[in-house]
Image (cartoon, rainbow, N blue to C red; front, side):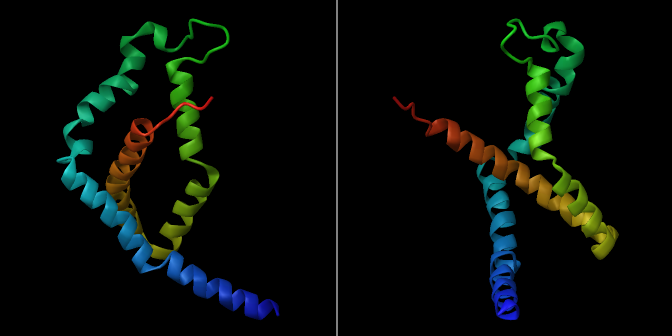
Length: 133
């Protein structure tokens, strides 16, 4: 019984996380990069200036004006902690162990196009956001 479930789960995982799924994920990032004319490259300076650079330029970014709110820096750290979790750190270590140095290159390639997929997802989420009662 357990072996049947394990075999079924393995077959489903091979389809879901196999080559077709990875091709769709990276392919979507490539498509969105082309459609936005390389947004993650052309706006890199602006992104850097408004996130990390703002920490050195704007003094009020580290403090919130209201006691019940969080500062921009705290919001950035919270978003990063939600994005970069323990699973990502352990997953990268495992990928380097199993795939060697070439795995790092392909993670960079996937991350470059993944940035555009994430950006597109956020823009569409904001564009189609509706208020509830």
